Image (cartoon, rainbow, N blue to C red):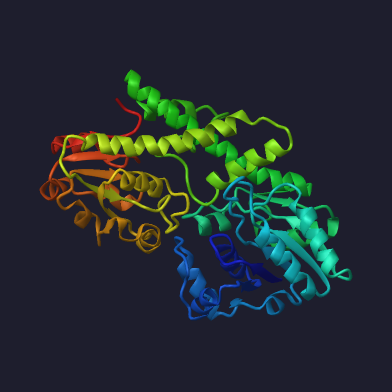
Length: 433
């Protein structure tokens, strides 16, 4: 099939590469000419585990191309996917729909034959109606259907998730549109559940899913606080909870709070939509507030370790919001470091993939190391803020020789507690007394 994807970010680019690998002819469209030039030169514009190999393969075999021209991408396409950003409004925190509306309005002129227009972006309930109206107004003769096709790709695992989806949700109000999407995802037939629902239900599913997972993270973080005060072990508690099939083991890892491009944005947008519809979503509101406080608590833990040290130096490992990606959007690590900077802390940080992104955020407010051991030099405390697996391999002997004081705040519970203490480290993890 011929597929056009508008937007080449963390949704659009992995989706485009994945669809090309399945044998479709894919054109990715983006307004950013510099980004398109970079992609056309054979270089990725973001890091996602496993993406580069498939990207280069499909570019070489001619199944994916990149352009700034909406006309070039949309004309004769069977499916046009809108995968542009829906950032939170700075005041209301509702999803900002200007990029969605602009894309829908512009693509309308280039629809030829029957076309399915799919919203991949996470959008408020009723967006499909708006997109449909915008296209029909701009091009009354267009033959099209609008479907909701929410993405469930985890950053850092987007390629794996694309080829191993636990479900494909399609919000389509016409049989013809449903058949087109069935054809697109035919390679997954018999391998995964494809759920066809009303368009507004599909738009709600993504928000409901992310909000629920955010609440689950907030809950286990509060339970970790409880365990620290009572002498229970949150890992044992989480294991016991996770054996209950109604709860499950996933998203029961305590840490510095949830982050990334989805959970913070989507919980706030869900809360806004609820208020607009006169619904009190107290659990979501509690998770939002608790997540903000969580990161402040983590910063305080780090500062408490050095409160009696004059001009302390803090080593930070991890700046991306999670491992496997260079994305720092709403990263708990970035929020914690920002809080530390506000308190006048001297920080040297290292992240395997997100150094460039973080430098754009912090500039010269912090120092940057070339590796984790350079970050540790003369540090008074080490704060681990992102769960990169490389950090698990920390050489404690080398660390103790580099650091001025042997103190660790492990916000991701990556390190072996017994080993850290055997080297004389003052170690503090999450959820254990």
